[in-house]
Amino acid sequence: MDKLGVITSFIHNILVFNIPLLYGTVGEIIVEKSGSLNLGVEGTMAVGAIFGYIVGCFTNNLLVGILVAFLASALCGLLFAALTVSLQANQNITGLTMSIFGVGVYFFLGRTLRAADAWPMMNDYENIKNGFADIPIPGLSEIPVVGHGFFNHNILIYLGIAIAIAAWWYLKHSKPGLRLRAVGENPGAADSVGINVKRMKYLHICLGCGIMGIGGYYMGLNMTGSFNSECWINGYGWIAVALVIFANWNPALAIVGTFVFGFFNTLRVSGSSLAAAFPEVLGWLAHIPTQLYQALPFIITAVVLVISSIRNKRGGSGLPAALGANYFREER
Image (cartoon, rainbow, N blue to C red):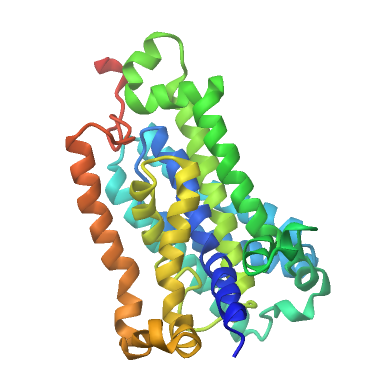
């Protein structure tokens, strides 16, 4: 057995199967930095997934699919913003409602098309299939063991990492990013110095939700567009909410968080291969029940919440001070 090949494949699969978490996490970080808590990541990603996939296939254009996924989910963000920013609805309830609504839209469209025998299969659309193929980075992809694992992926994986880095720079070093952070920390103070709080919230809620939608579209493509009884997102949106805490509201750390969560999630699929390749060291992996592997991401989520609570008490958290609180300008 090619032991190095098993390791390479394991690293490769961590990114392939878990990069949607990065899109969901970065998108939610941008939303939460505005002071809005959107628990509707699951539904928002589902809306982006279904609309991006269907339109992308029917136009046979990957770029159109990405754009439609972004816009469809951004519209979900617009609805969330209208309800919570303008109408001052409870953010927790609105976010949960958005999750139910988004998943409902996903199944309604998917089942309707499948019943009409009009469901598009990704492999029938050459530009979509070829556009989602792996693109090796010259030189880097040839590095032994890690080259193929890290530097030979499809365009949406590279795009997700680029968006995370760009979001980190935007929040950390740009003037609009500084204003956004001010709104999330103290909207009243930000308003008093001339920052349009409502505009900043609307813009960044829509932007963050749009990014989530691209992650949903990726999941549909990665499953070759197979529509079944389970939603493509399948709980990734909820894990993304927890990853925001793990990353301490830092898009750059979200890359690390995605890899850590992805490592344990990929063990569920590749644990037996690792056990067979390294029986002396990792043979015990073959004896772990599948159910435990499935529960690992959620167990880690609970651990993250405990660590976050400790970090909050020590004052090292990046949690926006006004997160989840509706802003009434008249009470400023």
